[in-house]
Length: 249
Image (cartoon, rainbow, N blue to C red; front, side):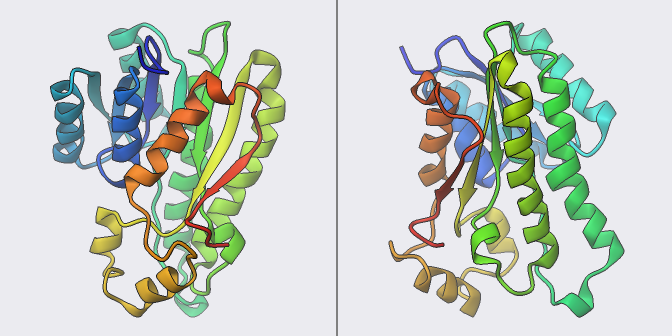
């Protein structure tokens, strides 16, 4: 029996990176997992295949979290497949680093629509499906709200909003036995980080130099913390931000 046996979890943006790592970590502890993705069906199917191949339960469901209709369909598919909901991981996120002079309205709205509006829409829908025993909502923030790196004005603003949404909803939903916490990772090596050209760059060297443990994190470094927050081990915790950053701050 795993810590999450009998539980059902939705992980947004779980086709790759931290989301995929969390989905697999929750499944390894017994949860049935809904692997949400916006565009990478191939990646989501790969995560589902790994979970099922290891004896777990998972399905992939497409949906853009910034669109209310997609979010509603995501949770309807969850209910149809698994009949309940216990855990929501708001992982879906986008980013682009650029100096202030290059910030555009379109990029501002792209990041806020996914990172903040998407989180709120997913949470709003999820709370309709939690049972009387409540549930656990895990938001994925960022150490950027502590380190405030240059060229990240929009991204860091979105993650500052995530921190505050976490605190507000922890108070608002506590009476319904719904806990809301945030994992704020440091630099993590993911497909997105590779695609952005960060690996091997001066930016990567700066991140590693600022990390006392001396390396970038891996999705597997974050997943056990999500398991902890999803499980009864953290039953007396809500409204918290956990820096999972190798000491970067």
